[in-house]
Length: 100
Image (cartoon, rainbow, N blue to C red; front, side, top):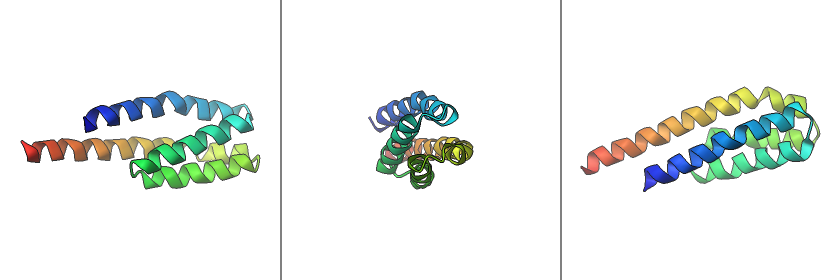
């Protein structure tokens, strides 16, 4: 069950990352604010603190209409998301192994 939830969340994040990037690249403030806020909340809920911090800064910059500065943080956000999900996946697999 944990693995299914993690996979669903990961797919949701992967599907929405291009929407954040597009908002930032095309100077669509509302879109950039919406998706940076969304990542901040959803990833914080599962303990991805690095993602939360970066997304929070991107949200702040986007609200201040500094979309180019927020775009500079996008590669960091992608990396933190990737690493965070890999850690969570590893944790779940180890937990399953110990339970078996």
